[in-house]
Amino acid sequence: MRNKDLVFICIFLCAICIRSQETDLARIEYAYIPQANSDNVYSRFRFSANYPIKMKEEGTYFVISTQYRHNNLQIGDELVFEEGGDLNVFQTFGLELGYTFKMKKNWRFGAKLGSQISSNFEGSGIESDDFRYGVSVYFVKSYKNKNAPKTSRLIIGLRYATPASINFPLPIINYFKRFHPSWSYSVGTPKTSIKYFFNEKNTLQAFVGLDRFYGNLQNNRTFVDENGEIKVAENASMLNIMGALGYEYYFTEHLLFYTYAGYTLSNEIRLRNADQENVFNINEENTFYFRSGIKLKI
Image (cartoon, rainbow, N blue to C red; front, top):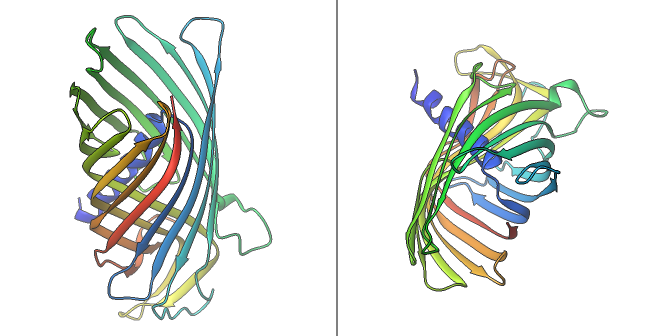
C-alpha cells in the first residue's frame, strides 16, 4: 500500500470519528490555510447542529444532524486545462439521522445514516455525482469517578461511505481520559491531544489532528500530463495532518470560544478521477494552519 493511501485512510477515519463522536449541539467555525510557496489559499466557513429528541425509554435519543460548509479554494497557480476552466467555490450540505441508547455496564450503542451534497454547483443544478452516503455503528464505554472531574471514554465502531477509494467498512477507535483535575488526554482520531485546565473557564491543549475537504466538479477538467496522457479530473480535495496549539474559553459550562493555530505535517490539494485516483497535485507544501469558532456543547 502506498504512503498516499495510508494518509487517505487516516483522514477518512478523521471524518468518521468527527461525526460519530460529536458532542456539539451547535458550532460556527472559520478556517484559514494559506498554501506555502504559492498564491493558493483555502478557507472555510462551517455551521453544524445536532438536535437530540428524547424517546420514552430512559437514555434513548433520536438525533437529527445538519451541516453546511462553504469551501473557498482560491488557486493562484496557473493550471492549464484543456477543458473546464478554473476551480471555484465548493459547498457542502449534509443531513444525518442517528439513534442511540444505553446498554449495560456503562456502554452505549449508536448508529447513524446520512447523506451529503458536496459540489461546486457550476452546472445547471444538483447532479448524482454531488451525493455521498454513509452509515456508521459504534459503541461508547464511559466511566465517571465519584471524585469528579476524573472521567474516561472509549469509542469503537465501524463506518462505511460511498463514493470512497476504500470499498469496505473502516474502524472507529478513540480513547479519552481526564486523569487529573487539571489534565486530560485523547488518543486516536480525530485528534491525539493533551489538555491543561487552568480553571473552569480557560484551557490550553497541544494536539496532532486531521482536516479535509472534498467536492465534486460538475464540469470535469481535462488536461495532458507530462507523459502526454490525457487525464480527467472529476472531484477536488484537500487533505492535511497538522500539529497545533489550541485555546478554549468557556463563557458558560456549555458555551465556549476556541482558536487553534499550528503547522501542517502533511498537506495536499489534489484533483481525482471517478475511481478516486490521484490525477493532479496542486500543492504539497506544508503551511500555516488556523481555525477558530464558537460551539455549544452537551
